[in-house]
Image (cartoon, rainbow, N blue to C red):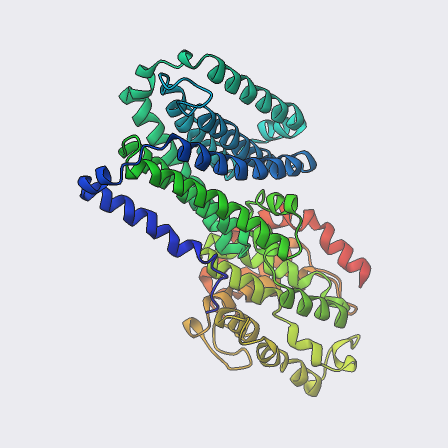
Length: 481
């Protein structure tokens, strides 16, 4: 199977601070020996993290103001909260702006910044009820402006009156354990959600946010179990720097792929599996799909719809994100072998004779051979080559049966037939949804894998409502045909 574009070198580097933290915990004497009382170093390290976070917050805020996606607003709030409060953490370093008698303000701000970042990142990774999301989008300028105002007020209060943060609050077990629990749980939720998006789409920014979330959790653990100025204390600052740089790196990678900086943030607002996979189609996939569309007018939108319906069936059958991605790309290109079929056969208005049908039957094998071995996975090639195989072994080109046919190809076969009969041809009208559903049901066990047919039955109504727009797509197809 083709490997995903792993966001190197960040994945291996995740282990380095984790190992360092474990060593310092197992050997406390090493932690003590690594003690370095350097307020100046702390000030400059924190300033670097805050500066990168401010840049991310500016880009995310611009994206949020342009977008009508509530998740992008949550992302902007995450970067604003992290940058604003962490900047206060640095500015309140004892001995600089704030008298060195007041140490609580800096510690409180540090934990608060991690809690805000983890909370808003987790909020950005889930779907919220429509009314809340609509309200957030409509008032996004007010929300972001209010957040900036609150951060400015907080910073002013801490810097002017650092004694307003009592030391007993920062050292109390409830505050320390509560912030630890919040960051670890919420940061982990966000990391898992964005990792799923990365595995589906392969987009660098999803991977970068995943890494940022993991570094955030690591930093909270190092901060919680460390002591002031000792090795673990400096380690958590290094982990935050690495997290900030990972996010900046992701934006640069997306920019190199042609996305604007704000556009790279907007892409993160997509949580739907079909949309995430579609966002991640590479240039070669898009080029082949466009060539197929141009070659065969009757397939207008067919590949996209078969891919989307296949993903919905695959989700129902609990396929992993990586397999869903390969399934979608294979289903999108399942008819790519038709590019080489003569117009007289491909565009014939009416039933094909025996010779013409034999020519048509060549397209699965031809299509599989067209896929670049360096870019296509085994799953994609299997979907293209075997989407016309039948569960009872009477299909083509290889006459495979049952489990010998890749599961992804069996899924695509259901989606392909359903969309084909729901679409008009020059020699017949489109079938109704009920007629097409009945065809799939009757074909279970002969044409189709029964499990795939059952999964299809579970999602087809949602497909018709959400993706086929109650038949509008198919009516448009019939008008074009």
